[in-house]
Image (cartoon, rainbow, N blue to C red; front, side, top):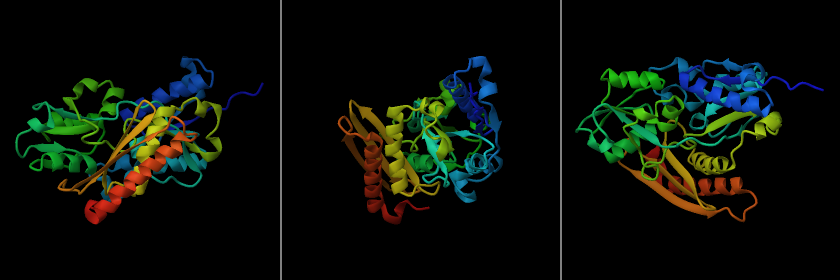
Length: 317
């Protein structure tokens, strides 16, 4: 009997990335038929430091965009040094290198943003001129749209670093992905959760992307990781991202969810200062459609193009 080849998993070295990759390592090992205690043998984790991890003193848009969290890992995939990569979907650029694909999207965590503060329960409760820490242009613009008086400070680093900076008084509040807090066992640190319909999160937020070489996309262990509802919802959000040519230089939010067989989607883009906001919403009934993922993506592209046509250059940095 042939033996199952080892599946080498590439991941960043941050605590959150390792938590996410460790979770998928156990899922992959199970899909390969291995016992939990043998997970590291059949699906070893390979830690790869990315440019986005090394450069922590500037916004991503200043050093090349969100692809800096994936570039070195994708090179390892193409070189054959690893067999798959576990990414946060929101870090994935709209376009991937030739030869690679997002082969599986597992069940999504909570997609909402978390408001974290030691002094205020909600964004609305912050005093005038309070310092809000974030490195996300989307979070900056959405917060300034709601509270134009806030002093938004650039705050990069992993989750622990940002929480430490908050505790040290470098900001009065910070915004983080609630999914990341939950995966680290820190969900109770959230003071409040942001309504995703009022402030749509980053496209794909809360979901993981399993990236492989295109030739490996239909292997049985890959197929075992896929969650259909999450895949369809993320397709809609990333369709909007692609239509808007989304990057770290544009403040884009997209939130898709199911109500029965109907997929609902809200897409918005804002000027960097939050003064102008452009929103479009729509839905598609997927009950009788053969290719739900393609239909969801088409909805996202349509709404993204509508936002782009209305906004013009107003959303460019």
